Image (tube, rainbow, N blue to C red; front, side):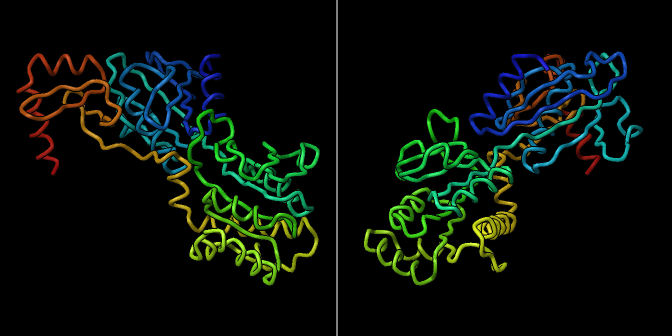
Length: 340
């Protein structure tokens, strides 16, 4: 991978922006790609790098967006004879570049980690930070008396529950929303009400409070008096965690994280879309010259004819179309009607 592509991928990861890496894992000459050539596709369909000629790019972008939407890697083949190149686990597409050859490209989505905000430096809070990090969460810890020694595993530690950076994604200079956010209040009798108010303000997909039902009733009464709607408080999980008979701090943290996983997986389709940045396969059109499927939203080469927009995989196809638009527009319509 080119050094500048590595740096770009690192920057996107720090900002919590999803992207996909496409790597050539097999080639047959005379393809211009080489094994190891890599490209990066952003959630907006931006293409950076090299995996072959211009005819490969629309297919790679389209399949990269699918990989992001489905949160799963894909192995694709671009071949002059895709019908003869079907193999288990491989999706074949036509290679329309005039140079010929074929390539196999592995597409790996890289998605931002879900975020866990822990309020409270109690033993349960510390255990939540440790286990949450082990599960792959980006962990923020909040406690007025906390420091890095209290939460060594946390990505960030805040002393103020209403600190402005707490509302930002880790690494994000301008702030913004979070793909999937969960919060747990484990203050255990210290600044409980302030912690609940701060947690509610984050609008997390999951909010749990580690406290007895009696104590939570008192907290609820206090924060409702501060202007938080009752329907908002109804979404709070208390006692937080699945009932596994937990007693020790680590066991309680385990039960809470198990409940978080349960909630997150139950909402899986919405979570997948959120964590992919809202990416989804774009509307598609057929290149009227070569027949390649082109993603409309990211198509760089377009032409207008007869009140209709045509999309092309490369500049060469567009130029050929413009030399005789009636011929290719009519041929493509007839072909589509015949297929129907």
